[in-house]
Image (tube, rainbow, N blue to C red; front, side, top):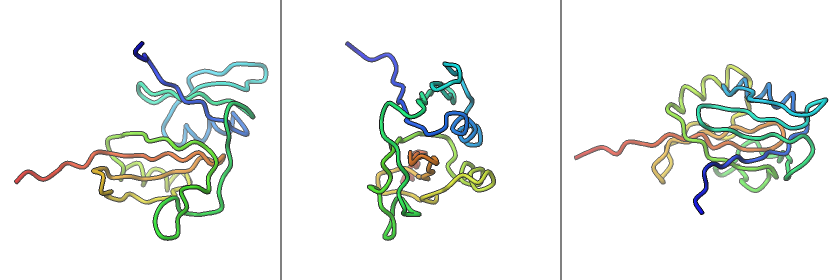
Length: 138
């Protein structure tokens, strides 16, 4: 049977702080559940991510400042890595710097045909923010 939707679930240490982090990234809180809330969702466009406080998966921030490159370590973070495609990586990079969001890989043209930026959630989840690179027509 074909899938209709996919919603990753991130284990977070503080759901309210995570809602605030995603709002700084430009996402919106979609909903929350529980008293006090321990489960909820954040949305951007047609994309949604579920957040679960202290459950459903792993988390953990590594000690490396970079996720790629000669001084980076793509295995240090124990959270989820997600690839999110957007329209403008460079504008998002400037926004992240202004909002104090940790950037672990600056906007870089990658050999697999995307311009990519990495940002890290405080619980060690890494978001590979990408836009397709147009190939020059000859």
